[in-house]
Image (tube, rainbow, N blue to C red; front, top):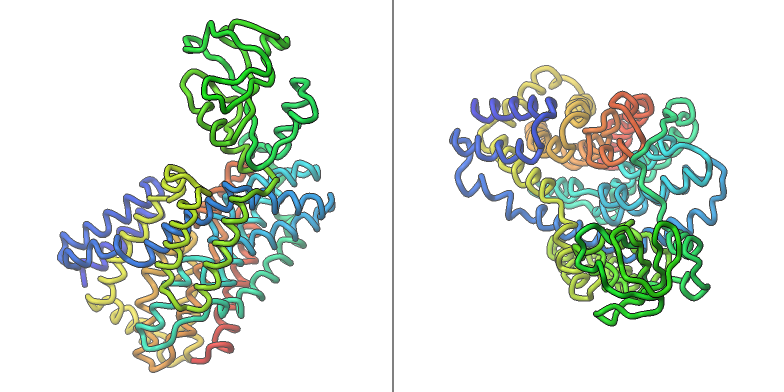
Length: 515
């Protein structure tokens, strides 16, 4: 027990210090617990085979497939065409889209996919990205409470509820609190955002590449057919660098490349269009063809792409066969998860496999989409959760809460647990926080003879209330540079949202899931 408390305290300090990679901290936690004798060898490595880790890995692939096939860009384009230039409509539409995507593909996936869309809409409506990116991330946190898929924490607390003698939460059961949370978050961002959000210019905001093809067509004088792009037909602009193996090759507009898969649409040298020419360093070529061939050519060491074809492709707004496959797999995955016929980890893993087999993503893209640091954090912190339960640490903490709050109502004890989760969750991973606090909440519920379900749901809501710092979640961190935010920009609008989530956790949750 002493070893467990020592590792727990030290891990929190190092997490808050924020000078060491969270993944390394989590790995160190598992190793420290093993060498201290707090967990066995099997318990120390059990997290790496935990269903939650498998579930999360598959979800990364599904999320990336939606972005890679242009579905998120298409949704953003449809949004841009309908909301107009009124700030309130842009903010509401972005927040609803963010919450909806999060409910299906997780906070990190939704924020990553929509940051370019938000930056594009902000630019087109004449406002800095800093005015819309924090609302985007906050809506994602609220959206994580709409379905079982919203965050791995939802799956975790559902399993813990069963282990503690309760029942699992239904696929859409989280929406009973998620809808009020999302509604309140939108209203707070809509009315308080203009006053509390900074107006920062950012040089690192993602570029809007949704009109890239039209830009190239205008710059190089391409004809109407050349300016069109479909799902299977891409275009790229490449530069011939010094010492390229292509220097000296004869090229001309309309010729096929050696692979016979690309057409040279234009050749420019120092801003002047060329006909038949011998390539020199500094020449620029515009190549058209299938997206796979375009991406392969851009990766060749003999050329330098001006813009990443993969990023251009992801912002293409024309849907194609692979887009429909990705959408169908997503819908089927959600249906199976909602019915609970197959374990969640198997369902998501199967969906990821189908997406790769259907070539919506290459094997390499699927591998790159999986965030190994996130998986290591989850796997490394699970042994700490185990140690807290098996060493008696949870019972000691629960006894302390009982000592000071035992004469109070279960709601007061719930308030104490919620405050702990909210405080820790601003500085360390909300998933790590819930993994630490959940065993304590279970012990409190068992020692007081109340249902574990309101405890589990309340810490889930509190864990989603990561609003005050950029390091609270990966979603918050993703928007920091594009929005030009400083560390202190989050808490101003984050504090009202934190209070909203706390109120829902302590007041509304016990009404829906009685003690």
